[in-house]
Length: 207
Image (cartoon, rainbow, N blue to C red):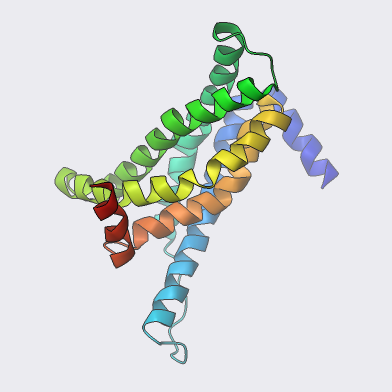
């Protein structure tokens, strides 16, 4: 494990953006496999297929599509976002690093700017990449965005407080990507749930 960590740090020093891109794509792909398994398991349980011979079959096309989201968006956008956010808070707002105000400002900006934008891009990309029309994608985003934003809003601020307080800037995206292993599974699961009744409860409350 120590050799892998040394190798990662070396890659991050020599090729920071490429390293973030590759690690993001890899983790988002793994996360989608997890989401597919969770969806398969919960569907069989709900329909009482526990004793059937239906086996879990990985949709590798979907894994590739989700992995490309990590490669094409999360990796590069996350790298420049965390680097830029740190510089902005230090130089423009002139807050002392690691202070309560410094961490709070980062968490607030990440939660109100990058978080919602990330969700919007994810659901839009997943719809378009699977061949849906623009009106269909708009309907999917309207259906999935609010439930995901509300559910993630109760988790990510806690994750990011620890990130911005204790993790050096160069490793902050790696820290986030580790949690994205679960987050990608969660978002993929939400997207695969289609028009589930529990989603309508969220959207009805927000209206």
